[in-house]
Image (tube, rainbow, N blue to C red; front, top):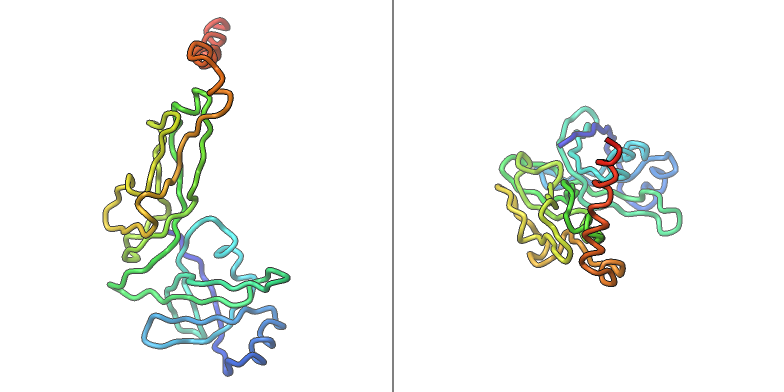
Length: 205
C-alpha cells in the first residue's frame, strides 16, 4: 500500500478560537490517537489532496515537529456549506495491533453475462477490512469471469488470508442484472447477437 508523507505542527491550544485561527491560516486541525499519547496538531490543507480525494487507500508518514509517526485516516469532517476539510482524526499504527480500513474493490475479467446483454452492477466500491497493517491489501480483487446473468459475488465469496471482512457476509459486491432487452429477446436472437461480431471479423480475413 502506498504511503503519503505529511508534516504538521503541534497546537499550543485546542479551543474553538485556536481552531478558527488554524483554518484561517489554510491549515486543518487534526488529532492523532491510538498510541502512547494523543496529539493535537495542524496540517496544511493542501496536504490532504493525495489522501482524501483519491479512491486509493494509503498509509500516512506523519512528521510532527520532527517526530515521526505512521498513521491512517480515521475520520474526516467537512464544513457543512463549503465542503472544505474541517477536522481530521488519525489513528497511529502500532506493531501487533489490528486496524480497520475501507479498501477499494478492483474488478477483473469479463463476465459472460455482459456478453449476453446483461448489465454489470457494482454495489460496493469499498469493503471494510480488519487486519494487521502488514497484511492490509491495496485493493480487493473480484474476478467476474464466471458471472452469468443474475449471478453475483457476495462478501462471503471472497476468500483472503489474514483479513476479516466487516461488511455483512450476505452483502452483494457485484453482480450481472438482466436487462429489458435480454428479457424481451428470444434465446436465438441473443446467440446471434453474440456471434455477429465474430462472424464479421472472420469475413474480413
